[in-house]
Image (cartoon, rainbow, N blue to C red; front, top):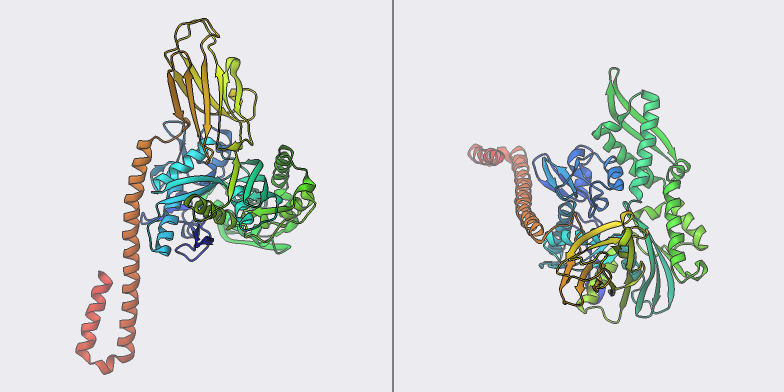
Length: 555
């Protein structure tokens, strides 16, 4: 998280003193809600109640193939909600991904308020560039649940470019290669003077460092099975320990050529405890991750082809996301672009800095910067024969508005159904369905005669509003697309109230823990004083102090 102070962006540390916060939430053994680093620390001993990879589930419907694939790779329970969305189980309660994301945003909000000594009510939130409309709307809803007025949703590569281009006056053509834990994006931009313009963007919301971790986990499990005959993949606790070891090994192999993975007491059988001890080389890691790096480079090629530039035109390649520290990824980027990537920005912090600059622009604290972003996927309506008729093509600059006139398919048709989709396929059924609505009251007329004007409005956050108007009668119907799995205003209000109630509970628990820590320190100091100086103080004083210590212990 970051802010702008005196016209300059600054990264804020969280309550734990760290400049980054893992997107992990959990419920502890005593029912307390834990977020971030502390949630990650206890994940091995509490795998069923520790939720991660929320970004992969937000704004999705449960039945999507990618969701089912990701579901198989996590230890916690998931189910299909009433509207077809995703619900995640944590400590016997079911949550929407928006609620879980709101818990993380709520912690960031509380930590920022503690650091700055003032109330935070507004925010700019970043998302992967390839997030569709449902995912953007769901992210905005998460911010609202956390008590934030979300002023803008900004694409992560665009935010990185904004941070890189801040206060730079020379004209440059740059590529932002963003390989994070859960998602991959590539954006091609032109940065010149006071204008930062996105020319093309592409990505995969289901490609990230966690996929590499999963490959390592499966390799470790296979090696362990060869040696012991036991497949530990069905054991949630063992799987979480493998996950932790895989991530640690991957990080170590960014600087070392070989690492040792040692997991004592991974499981047990009739012969007793079984341990995992195995060496892993950087070459093995590169072999396991090759398919994911190849996918990222194919997407990069696509993004370059969609831009007006050739590869030699690119002046700088900016790396974003912790996974870009991997030497194999840096080498693949260098080979593709024919130049070493720019290593001057912190891949973990640059996106937050860009978001802060965008907030500064919106507030008027940062002047003379124009940011022009694009829509990542084409927007269409379904027309006769199930064809997806595009109104707004991908990589169109936003905000934007496009209108097109359609007509009826049958004589005396009294209404038309407007079905909105997002994607690049020719048929609507092959694209992402964003929503449907009816326009009624069309006067009787032969097919093809009524004039129905459909208008798509995309705001600067990439969120779509659709309007349909029958030109003869002037009858109009509009919808802000929330998708079949979206949250209503009532849902958001209820979740916001729930989040506020939990924030109060969590605050009380924290105060209790702090009071207990102070009491423990007082007990320790008193008992040490009795031990060191009790003889000098006299029997009555010692007894009085000891009584108070005993009372404090049982309080």
